[in-house]
Image (cartoon, rainbow, N blue to C red):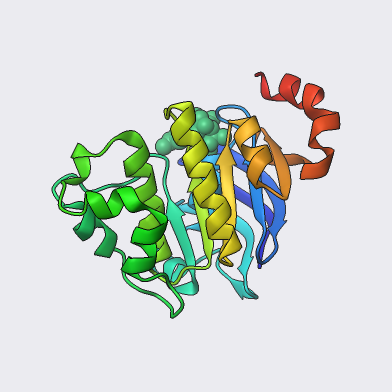
Length: 230
Ligand SMILES: Nc1ncnc2c1ncn2[C@@H]1O[C@H](COP(=O)(O)OP(=O)(O)OP(=O)(O)O)[C@@H](O)[C@H]1O
């Protein structure tokens, strides 16, 4: 579904991605694991067309997106949930939900979304900023399920959240996957990632250095912990 190869990206003169290579197949949940600053968020931003300078290839369902602007990437069917969650403070939960344009048929209805995220139904009239961190994260994910995007890029959805909320988010991501969405997840929470993902790519210094199928994770956990510095 998504094939990234030879991906390089720069912030001005600073070269941060050095030939990223990985793929995500339809229906999979795949993680990018790595230390702070390894280049995981920059990889998602590059896919979304948000890095001004990038080279290489990003193919999505056969179409080349390396030079595509964010609106075209969105219309191709890729939804992005950034690390800061991007909830609009002045808008209610319901308004935030309706904000991203529908890009393709097959997105979830508001009724389905409320079914999956009951908290959001209860808080439909509340302003975005009155939500807890966990509710904001759920809203940020819910918002892209409506659009018809089929590949979801989630940047550290568990960051700063209490363990019980992390578990809830995990159950939701599994349900989303069960409903046919494909997920590319950036995570530092190794244990969380292992409950959801089919495969993991280890990112170091702007490149993929290893691919670990989830079933091999227990045997390799110790070495991975060392490499991730956790
Ligand atoms: N806006 C920016 N301008 C300049 N350099 C940046 C910017 N954002 C990130 N960087 C640098 O790019 C490199 C990769 O950062 P990136 O955010 O992609 O890492 P990451 O693996 O997602 O880690 P983190 O979990 O800290 O976000 C780091 O060296 C970082 O300092």
